[in-house]
Image 1 (cartoon, helix red, strand yellow):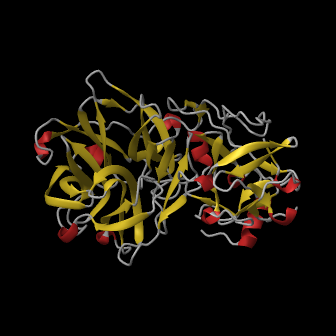
Image 2 (cartoon, rainbow, N blue to C red; image 1 turned 90 degrees about the vertical axis):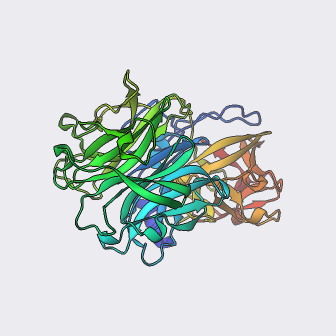
Amino acid sequence: MRITRSSSVLVRRLCSTVAAFAVVIGGLTVGTVAAAPSARAATATFTNPLNSSGADPYMTYYDGNYYEMTTPYSGPLTMRKAPTVEALKAASPVPVFSAHATGRDTYIWAPEMHLLDGPNGRRWYIYYSAGTGDIEAQRVHVLESSGTDPLGPYTYKGMIFGADDWWGIDGSVVTIDGRLYFTWSGVSTTQWAGSDPSIYIAELSDPWTVTGSRTRISAPTYSWETQGTPMNEAPVALQHDGKTFLTYSASACQGPDYKLGLLTFSGGDPLDASSWVKSAEPVFERNDANSVYGPGHNGFFQSPDGTEDWIVYHANSSSSQSCGTTRTTRIQKITWNADGSPNLGVPEATSTALTVPSGEPVVTYYRLTNRNSGKVMDVQAPNTDDGVKVGQYTWYGNAWQQWRFVDVGDGYFQIESLNSGKCLDVSGASTADGAGIIQYPCRSAGNQQFEWVASDGYHQLRARHSGKCVNVVGASTANLALLEQRTCAATAASQWTRT
C-alpha cells in the first residue's frame, strides 16, 4: 500500500515503537561514538514468528543478508532483506516486481528466488504461481534479475511450461548431476477437475523453459495425504552429503492437518518415477502441545557460516484457523539422521527462545540525531521505494528511522536502512550543493559511501564522491525537512550524533 504524506504523518504519530536492533560497529578510527542505550544490541536468541502474516515462505542467506518472500495474493511481489533474524522481523517488504499483465495478475502465490547460471550469466530467478482468479487458470511464471542483487530489478521471462500450458502451482528447481530440473504441483490434464494435485518433475533447458515430457513422482495416496482434500503440493529440494530429497506439503491447507512428506532420490534418472522413494509417514506435522497447526509449504536455507541447515515454513496458532492470512512464517534448525536423511524435528512453540543461526553477525542499528533540530534521520513515505527522499522527523523508534553502518574500507561506510535494506545515497551522484539525499539499492558507488568525521564534539557524514556533508535544508527544525549535501562547515545543521 502506498502511504500518502498525510497518512504517513499520522502513522508516525500513532506508532509507538517497532523492534529496534543494534550492531556494534568495529574499527571506527575517526571520532568513534560509544553506543548509547537506545542503540539496542541484537540478542543471541529469537522467537517465532517472523511476521504477523506470511504464507508460503521462502528464504535464503546471500552476501551478508537474509532474503525472505511470502505469498502476496495480489499486488507486487515483495522481498524482505536484513542481516539478522531479529532485523528481518522489523524490515518491511520491498516491492521487486509489479508488472503483472492480465492473465497472471490474480492468485499470486508462493514466490521462490533461486540463484542460477543462465544464458545471461549468474542471475536470480523468481518462480511464482498466478492466473486470472480461476483456480484452473493457475500457471507458473518466471522472472530474471538484471544482476546478482536479489532485490532486482527483474524482468518477466514467461510461463515456464510454454506451449504445453500445464496447470501448475508451487514451482521450484533442483540441480541433479549437473542438470537443472523443475518441480511443481500439477494435475494430469491442463484442467484442475478430474485428478488430485500431485508432484511432477521435468528437465529445464534454461531457467525459464521446460524441455521434454513431465513425470509424476508423487500422488496423494496415504491417508495422511488426503485429510480434507487429497493434495501433494509445494515440492522443494534439500541436498546434503551428495543426497537429494524433496519435501512436499500434503492434505488440505484449510485444516490443521496440513503437513510435510518426503521423497528421496535413489539414483538413476530423475525423470523416472521409480527413482523417487516416498516415506510412508509424514516428516513434519501439527504439534498440539506447542499450539502449532498446519505446518507446511516450506523452504530450506543455510546459516550464515554454512554449518547449519534451517527450515522455513508457515503455520497457524489455532486449529480453527484456515488457509489465509493467519498463517505466519517460522524458522528452526534441522538435523540429520545417521542414514543421511533429514530430521525436521517438531514445530517449535512461538514462546520458545531459539538460538540464532550460526555465524549470524552482531549488528547495530542507530538513530542519527541532528544537532540543530534534535530530530532524527528519517525515510519519508512511502518508505521502501527507490529514490524516496530522506529527511528529519521526531524519533518514534520506527524501522525507517534506524540505520546501520556497513564498513566498505578506507574509513568509509554505507548507511543502510533497517526498514528497506536500502542505502543512503546522494541523488544522481551529483557533486553540487543542494543535491538531495535519498534511499536507493545498495551498490559500490562513491555517492553511497560516507565518512563519519568528528566536528566540534559531534560528527558529520561526508560523501566520498563529492567531499560534501549531509545537511538539513535551510537549517530547518521542522518535521519533514529534507536532507541535502552541502559544502562542509562547522554548522549545527550538518552535525549528527549516533546513538
